[in-house]
Length: 132
Image (cartoon, rainbow, N blue to C red; front, side, top):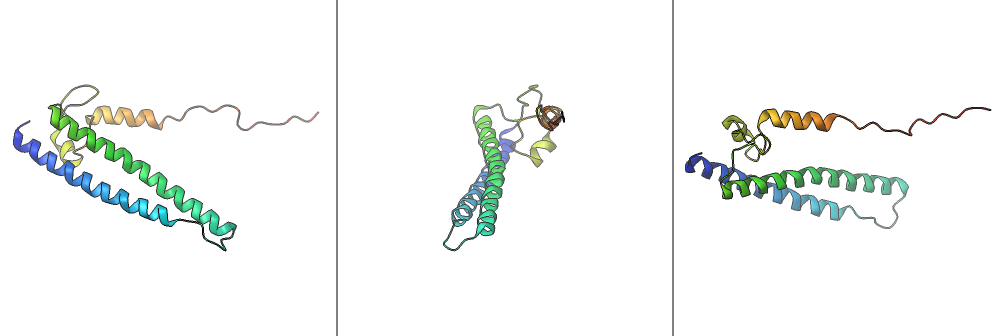
């Protein structure tokens, strides 16, 4: 990859990083504002807990993206940017343009996502009681 493209990807990644950090700081402030005050009833408390949970879950996804952006910047710095971390084939230019923080080629990404959608089998739920 030529130095001009690397610089463009670096600028895009740094801009994404800056936006994401500002977004996370805003969520931290919102989460801090979800505090219990005097006179709260159980319904208010339930809403407050739910809002805190939602903010935390949304932030978890943003933290994952933050890590992937930082990892992409590290790959830019060490000269491995643009290669799939799994199969080591080049990541398509269109994919990098759409997702500069992509670490996997589209085939490996699809395989990784399909592995995530397979739910583990749970045992012990739905216990039935026999009369006797």
